[in-house]
Length: 413
DNA sequence: TGTCCACTGGAACGTACGGCTT
DNA sequence: AAGCCGTACGTTCCAGTGGACA
Image (tube, rainbow, N blue to C red):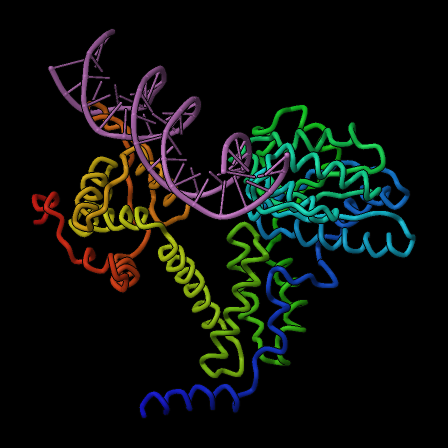
């Protein structure tokens, strides 16, 4: 009965109150707006370098860099989709393929999705990279097109797999007779060139476009533009919008972040039955986003990574606020035997710690303790209650949350 | 001044898996 | 069917190292 009443309440509030959103899709960061404020220069530059394709010439390779949320992807997609429309009007054989290298995180997968877009069927797995590359070549020559390849987030691919793929792609034109390929590389990391073979880098960056971070006032006008179609009239207060812009400006001028904040703030307001989104909703949104990010990250860890987090948690609980690798390994071993799981090696554990560090769940830094060796100091970047909440509900791990490791008895004061 | 701890992190290799070609 | 392929996840081995201590 109680549940019924609660739900009635929720439904009533949703139906009766003035709606906050007109169209919340507009705030998703994969939404492509009609206008991209403050990026006119980049649009013009990219447009200019890419237009030769309309006359059947290979356009220059382009290297684009800038931090996350500075509009690199949006501008590229914007320009290329306009180019595609124009090409259709002129009957020019131009096609482009957008590949996100985070998603296609290997040479094989990048080539596979390129094949797909030239109409070459390629299996999920099973072929050698060379084979897939050959198919791409024959597919391209059969298609007879100017093919513009966009490799978004190339930096992640290069850091893990090296630049072999880029090397192949920059040289592919030499073996192609009826088609031409132009490359657009997009990188979040400004120091990407350090990881690249100079030959590859120079041929990839025939042109370069840099995306500076947005400042607070630019972010504000971007948000304003989107808010017009996303929110109902008068449903968004000016100070809430400003706060979103200010918070995102403080963090690399990340427009994606600003949009997320605004959208979640709207959802918070909606849930609370408020007619207007105010600053407080933005603050809540900020906490919400971070909270969900961490919870999701924790839940998706593998068993052993979870055990590593739990080990740090236990050390932390016994007043060891910054543990060293050896201590963590001891606790971890004990937790493993408690679960009846064979433990991984210390070497492996150390790379798991590094992964957790880059996810922001732990904080690890190398320190030298002189006589007492060189190791890593590792701290928990989460509240203990959060660890309890997430792992406490886990069928296997729940028991270990309150377990007291024997190897830590001497620490307990 | 050198020693030597407790690791770090690179590299090569092993195993299991799903899935291709021939 | 055999043989090969890429990927994910792990192990084994080991040279390298910053700095407190003797």
